[in-house]
Length: 188
Image (cartoon, rainbow, N blue to C red; front, side, top):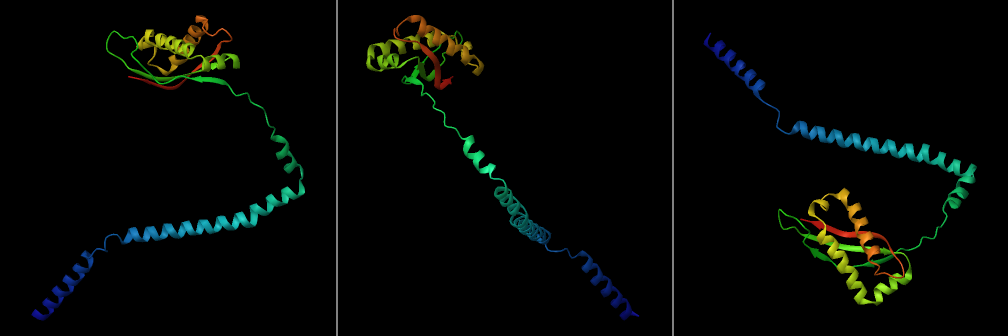
């Protein structure tokens, strides 16, 4: 009887140990990765077959049967002459705009678009005039309050203010400023 009890206890211990044995960690992850790779390879093969046997022959058949597609593509592309704007670039300006609460800092590069070539030539050849125009831009920016500079939406009003100041100064006798651009505008 003791033998039978020992055998039963041994059988129960083996059954319990088999139930407690867990599969090795990471095996389900490896199986998932292998399955995902097989699915991707299968999708790639199906896509290749569909494109080479179904889509590509239909497109080549459409091009052969309809000659207007090729000629339409050529006719749609019309070259348009675009006038290059007459731009004058000023050097980097580091300024302190007006503010009652703190010392502010503005780092900007201003570009102006001019009306005609005479004005552009005058500005590039006459250094004194270029310095006077740059000084007017500096003074206008310094006198503009920080609160009027800090929002991006206010930049259009600032551009218009600079344009009006430059055209109103009558420094550019042969033409006017068409637009003002900011290549850089850093305000702190």
